[in-house]
Length: 388
Ligand code: RFL
Ligand code: PHB
Image (cartoon, rainbow, N blue to C red; front, side, top):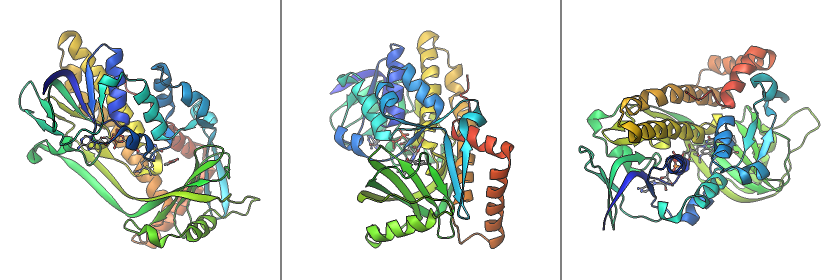
């Protein structure tokens, strides 16, 4: 069937769904298509930490009611190394900003529930982009051809949007890390009142939370490790060792009910626009999760894109559309830098010279002894100001 919509959005992740809300609020007609089912989207475990402005945006859109009730708000993070703990006081360092822990799939549930049903199609097969060299680009699916004024490619790293741009027009930058994260969900009470990021000789570990009864923990592993090699006993033993401390503290353990391994890369596609196709979120850039930036960068992209589209529908001005990629890339590269910094600072990398490993330890010592260094980390972690 042939259909028409003002903005066609590929991908019902944080980028696509938030864009749909921002456009709907401005009276612009948008349709989101995703190849996964609603169930799968609402149950995939990914991010946990939201920047302060992302929280404020969700609340201002009327999408923050459950978040306000159920999220965890922390006054900073703890860095752990050499058997010692160091609390970074974010409200003091950032003029009142805090860390919000609210799982990505909970954000997605809230965004989906608040969109009219006819604005999202789930389980759409064979999504392809066509007529990108015309003023009427289209999303072709197994059943429909959806003619659009604009297409937003919000379909993640593996989606079809970036690949629809001619290779000769694409400029990318990438680095792949020689480690991954094994993530678990466990039924246990919290071990600590805030996130703990640990650097240890045996590798990185991260203690995060989901609720008073469910905890989220990660540990550094080989990127291609087989989950079968990671028994529950081995996971707990590694976490205990990597989080060890001389203080009176112990890790609360429980039944592990979910495990997965993710590899880690940094990636930027500087070509974020091709004619009337605009890439946003993981479709255009990837960060390793150590800085908790990916979802937040995706949200920042679509705020910039929505402003540009709203301006175009007002008076056909193309200025903001033309500035979309450079405006986003200024923030993206800072997010890339911070995520790379947190990752190299906190992970054990045997490919690094011992000299460089010593530098990371010196960096950590400097950090916990310097208010200025803590302030630099904190202002990036809670989120740099949005461009106005
Ligand atoms: P998504 O979330 O990947 O959504 C893309 C959507 O596109 C759909 N899609 C297609 N639809 C139609 N046809 C096709 N052919 C399609 N191919 C794909 C997919 O089904 C999907 O629904 O991209 P988006 O919206 O750009 O959002 C990006 C974020 O999901 C990602 O950056 C974060 O999860 C990264 N991340 C974190 N970000 C944070 O801000 N804070 C965190 O604490 C944080 N922790 C994390 C993370 C990512 C992690 N993993 C799993 C890599 C922790 C982890 C472990
Ligand atoms: C999470 O809770 O999933 C989480 C927390 C902090 C990160 C990454 C993921 O840096």
